[in-house]
Amino acid sequence: MTVQLHTLANGLRVVTEHMPGLQSASIGLWVNAGGRHEQADQNGIAHFLEHMAFKGTARRTALQIAEEIEDVGGYINAYTSREVTAYYARVLKDDVPLALDLIADIVLNPAFDPREIEVERGVILQEIGQAADTPDDIIFDWLQEVAYPGQALGRTILGPVDAVRGFGRADFDRFVAEHYGPGQLILSAAGAVDHDQIVRLAERAFGHMTPSTLRIPEPGRFSGGERREIKSLEQAHFTLALEAPGYRSDDIYTAQIYASALGGGMSSRLFQEIREKRGLCYTIYSSVGSYDDTGLLTIYAGTSADDLPDLMGLTMDELARSAADLTQAELDRARAQMKAGLLMGLESPSSRAERLARLVGIWNRVPPLDETVARIDAVDLQGLKAHAQALAGAGQAAMALYGPIAHAPNLAELTGRLAA
Image (cartoon, rainbow, N blue to C red; front, side, top):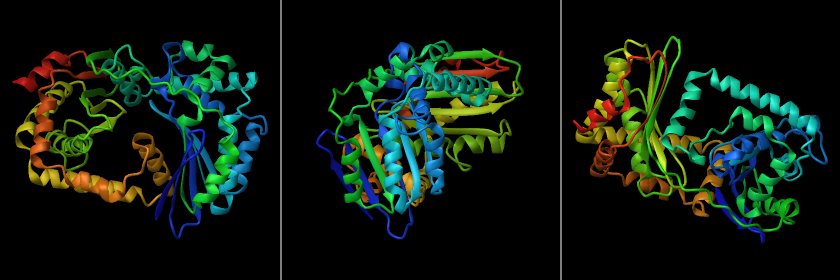
């Protein structure tokens, strides 16, 4: 398997990885424009723009976009995160040129038909309503908001209803002009692909674009705080966040291994102590989500109103205890889980294409797999304990609660258990 990286004269980067033996390929365009790149009055527009890409171009109607990819048995989709918007397709190897042409067309030539804008506005408002009615979905938006208050990084990806109701073509044109320059685009492909062919197709589709000034989003500043929303639900939903390293940090692998040991699987501390031994919940887990300059260690659990105080207290106790008595066996198990997840994911061309784009976006290169594995292997018990101690002693945390939570302890009471 060979990774190759090429940069067009206008700054657009093309990265590919040929995977022998495959008959299919995944190809996509990753745009360095997500929720954190929006101004306050633009909140939700990156996601709305992603939807509009499939609603017709100067060359194709929305139906033609769907028919052309499905006529060859392919698949096309997109997503918006806080840092990127991605448009991607999966096709057989002979249809790679078609897939690239479709992706280029929907990204560079959206029609922004006023009638389609209104139709998709209704779809997104329904999506916002669905998220609001899903407790274990909306609570993470609230957690993000209290972790990064008053910042683009703390705002929702879907945006507020009033903003979504007001967006028009001029707003889309403005956002595209600001954030869809060639230097903000990465074309990534993996599977049955030929690098030279992809570069030629990329030159044809994107070579005419004029370089533009890159806009740097405001830095993320973790502040912490709490949000409590009382509602008559069957379960109380609890989320807690502590600041974690960004993905450029040398400590990122330590943070990921720690999150796995704490609550990443059935053998983890939180799962064993709170679910298996005490039966206080069905779901509890921890994970690390990282951004360019910051990150979050997030813990989530759902439980009954009566069990919530005990669950919250025990969670903090496990955080405090882990700083003192993490074991080599826990480190080895979490490391093995992390490496297995990485290597298993690489068996999919879609996962490889996304990984290539992500790494080029971070480092402007694709580190060899051996280099990544070596960094995972370099995490030792002393460093893991030091990371746990820093988290427990940070003094700042973010918390969101939703449901029958009237008798839940407040954030100050919880963080006090870390210092005890």
